[in-house]
Length: 353
Image (cartoon, rainbow, N blue to C red; front, side, top):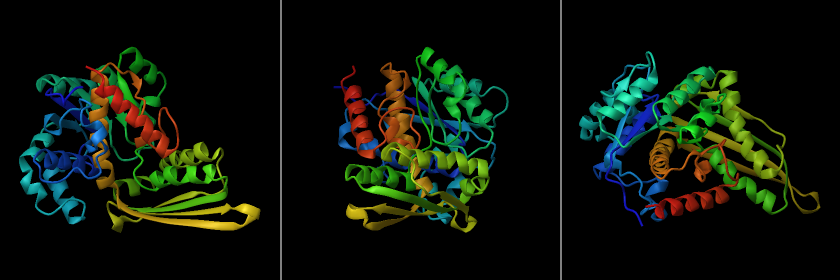
């Protein structure tokens, strides 16, 4: 059995002043100080207790962003939007300022910034996590994935961007002995799809159509108004259905930008299916949630798991992390099967010296 490592680990966030990153940074500080429970963190569950994951108070955060709004102000904006609790930014002001001082404007070779961050803080290793706003230019995310490799870091793509799936990058990561995971975090509508779709297949119910609508604001809402960005996002949502149902049923997913919603999202699904003797039936779901609050604990989970995988010598796509993604690099499609594979990873990490 191993216990949590006393070594310090780096978390380098791409999009470090965005809503997800700010919530992640604030959440890490609040959890480390014992100000809140680890609600939503999978790695806080009992199976991961002795897996040797880095402690949150040993996690050092930095990142890249083109925005210049300080983290303290971003945190206050999230308080006003109902994402963070009142009083939290003041309680963790020093931690926000420390992280803010480690955020760099992407100018020149990003690998040099990441390597310098790791060296200056004497970190055992750093995990690079892409939580940037949805992009339409694949060269941006592939450049950061390449930078992670050049800096000797594990990499997580929490967005639908190309990332490590750029030409030759996965092969380079494998040759360098680096772990990676992705892509596109599964936090809301697709999480429900991954849980529900296997029911229809396992009960031999014929799904005739599966349609959905998303209303969201914030940076992602504005970015997803671009058809190319929305298409990349929807590809992951559709993959969950096709992988679980053996084919893609009729239906589309619409994404509508509603700026007034801020970081909150409403998602509807309408499933038309046939039962015995052709009886026609319908399932409808409504999901209302805050993307940042749903994503942030998963970012912390993935940083801890990929860092531990790196420490144990796991390379390439990390088995078991498909549980966190719409469009996973490897593994099964059904949520239950993905969770069982994640528990197998936890056991592997527990049994590693």
